[in-house]
Image (cartoon, rainbow, N blue to C red; front, side, top):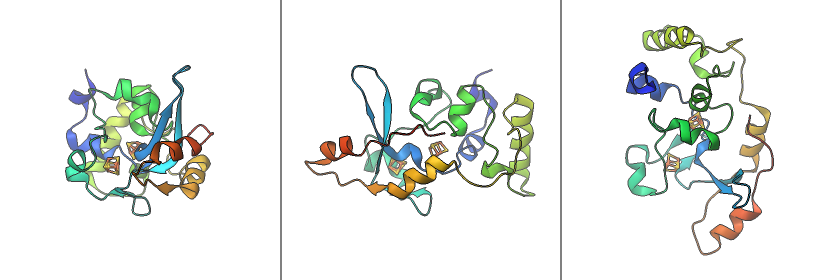
Length: 166
Ligand code: SF4
Ligand code: SF4
């Protein structure tokens, strides 16, 4: 069964923890094909509010914005942070212990999704821990909003974040 058959559209959206890290620019080393996150993020990302300012029309406002979809996640996973639920599902790993879906709730949609994740082996191992990984918090502390001028690419190269994002 494919991921698009397993998860409804609503469930797929709920898997995102809204960390915003996929909205940070990345650089690929031409020789090694290694991907590095930078500390520079999309001008439409509202980092503190953990949301996109133009979400419904994001592809019109930001042509380089990429949809994370069940059909494409297998090839997108390598440039997502390691804690991202989509990457973890693509890699057949459980969600992180601190995932917001595992906060106390009586929401029937969340409870149904939790059951599905448990049945598929994607439930966190010790659900309920609080907080994003340390290196994600560190990246956010250093973060700066992109200025899309002539020096944009030069500044990106100077802003590589040299830590793996767990
Ligand atoms: S990295 Fe994953 S969890 Fe974080 S905002 Fe992007 S899609 Fe959502
Ligand atoms: S436009 Fe795309 S890359 Fe920019 S903040 Fe919105 S979702 Fe992220």
